[in-house]
Each structure stands twice: as C-alpha cells, then as structure tokens.
Figure 1 (spheres, rainbow, N blue to C red):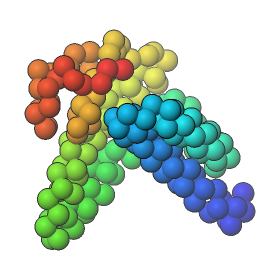
Figure 2 (figure 1 turned 90 degrees about the vertical axis):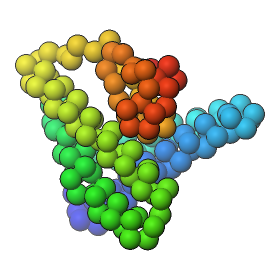
Figure 3 (figure 1 turned 180 degrees about the horizontal axis):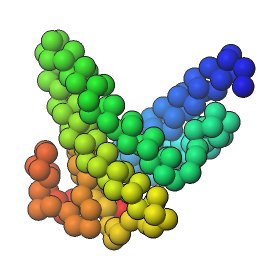
Figure 4 (figure 1 turned 30 degrees about the horizontal axis):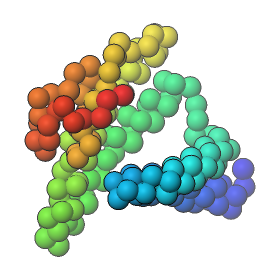
Length: 167
C-alpha cells in the first residue's frame, strides 16, 4: 500500500473509531435524559461508524489470527500501563487536574487486568482451546474487570458489585 493511502486510512480508522465511541456514549446519555429514539439513532449511526472502521482495519491488515489479535491486545494494554498512562498521569498531576488523575488511575488498574486476561486467553488460543469463562463483569465507573463473579464492591472505586455490567 502506498504511504499516503496508508496514512489516510489510518487517520480514517482513528476518526471512525472515535465517532463510534462518541456516538455510543451520546446514546447512553440520551437514554438517561429520556430520549430513547435519539439514543436509538446514535446507536445505529455508531454501528455504521464501526462498519467503516472495520473496513479500514481490514485494508490496513490490522485483523489477524486470534492469537495474533490477542498479542496486539497484550501489547496495547501493556503500553498503556507502562508508558502512556504514567506519562498522562504526570501531566495531570503537574497541572493539578484531579478528575483526569482519577480517570487515569481507573484506566491503569483496569488495563493491568485486561493484559493478564489476554495473556491467559492467548495461551489457550495457541493450544486451539477457548478460555473457560462463564461471565465477565465490568464496573461501569472505572472499568475494573472480574471473571465469573462480580465482587461485593469494586476494589478500585468502591462501586457496588451488583451494579456491574455483565457479559
């Protein structure tokens, strides 16, 4: 692929990915505000943006085998924990942005768990075996992730475990 085309598709992938996330968040907010049809519109268009991002990812060669995709996940989560978020945290501390510090702390703690889960999943996938997971529980405040059973309360932010989102 030519460099300019690749750069354009990478930027388009980032833009479509961000639009997908923003619209998903906007849908949640519209739902809370009592606008279910506006929420539906945001969710539908968010899905269209996902389709665009997936098409770009395919063309860029981002989608590989499951073990390779898991390694990409491991690498991304590890980078966030070891480099990206510590640098962002230093900036937030320097500028005394308490809300940003809290959001970064939540992310780091969740990303550590995610990297570990991906590592275990990769080991299984390389043996051509699926992971033994019944349920996954995510704290809707900080992203803390628990397997098979939600904690009584989130160990990172204290949110009640019975309000975790179940997958």
